[in-house]
Length: 83
Image (tube, rainbow, N blue to C red; front, side, top):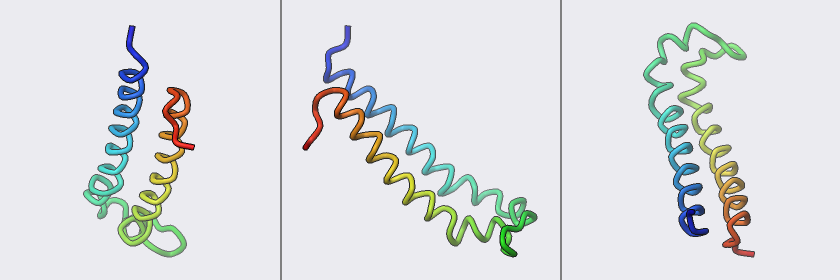
């Protein structure tokens, strides 16, 4: 059986890898398809332009808050939260 520290580290590592994958997706992969995305328009702007100018930045900020909330839950579940 895993100890509490091993369980906490496994959950933290899994969360970190998920968010790094999302960061890679929004930071690089979406921009590889900018020409295809430009065929779709949102509020008069091509989607590729929107993702480069605003969309990825918004996704990164949202990811920061989601990560902090999820990490806090992991910490509380394993009894290592900082209050």
